[in-house]
Image (tube, rainbow, N blue to C red; front, side, top):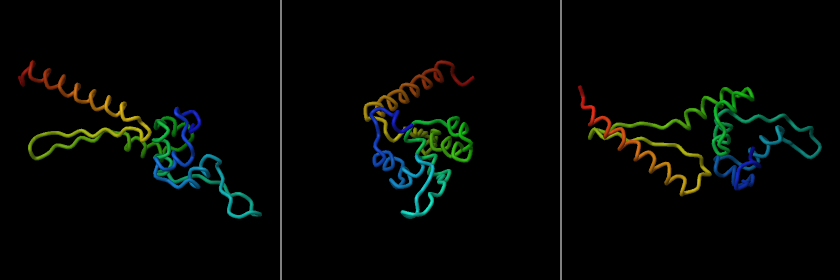
Length: 132
């Protein structure tokens, strides 16, 4: 999956964005970990948390993770990607969107503009229909 991301991500860059070590990323891609020069490689599968963060960097969905029998990581990925809504004491509500780590700045700006436009549209609709 990493090789299909445009622009192509190196192991080092992908690992940095996911907050995991390069060795962990590499072991996950290969599915095994070598412990010594002459030792047999050991099968390697990352924790659900690590896998969820790796999947997030690659723009994978919880369904993608269910498809490889990693429902544990799929649940975490669903939480990572979910917008959080927080109401302040002033009555203002703040919504936070999680976007993929690799998203270019102009795309982050687009997400912000869409969110603001949606908020304005909902606010207008609410005021037009009144509270009756």
